[in-house]
Image (cartoon, rainbow, N blue to C red; front, side, top):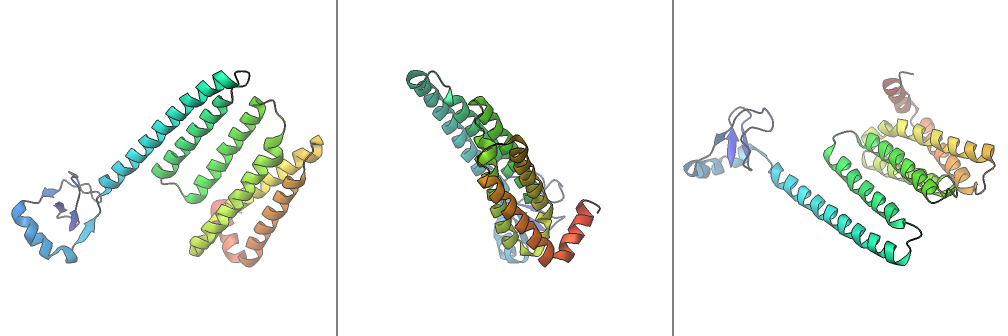
Length: 231
């Protein structure tokens, strides 16, 4: 246990510098620990951040190890059973995408809305790439991506309820989902693609969601648009 005399906090890990002011901290001797214990309630304590980071790092290493082992097994099964189609490449790429997405969500301090938007974009690219890799049957744009947008709407709805004081901060993300839904439906209509049911549902649900947000939160929505998009 160390202490920072500048911030007047106790630091329970073995850091050499204060995590708040970055000043070199003083070590607490055994003779001082009992005295500091008496004043512990009156002093703010900074948690053992390194312990949490070590646990997260160990968890990510375990996940990475499991992914690598699973991919090796998948490649062997693929080579022995179905060598004519390398489905193990799709499984491996998807697993590593999942792994690096977890790292991004854990280590970056960007807002939740930004993380959700970027994850949706990257997942959409992955789905289209898999569709083309498997011979392009159109399932990505007909089913997977509209379903992904609907899932994004549901996630945003949950976060709006959780962070209800700042629900309007997700408005730009809803506009993004609406634009993507309209583009997908337009591709189906212009290209004469089959299976329009889910894209139509996606446009309807996303559009109603955005419309409700605009109507019932007009003031907050307008303020967010002026702040974010300068409109």
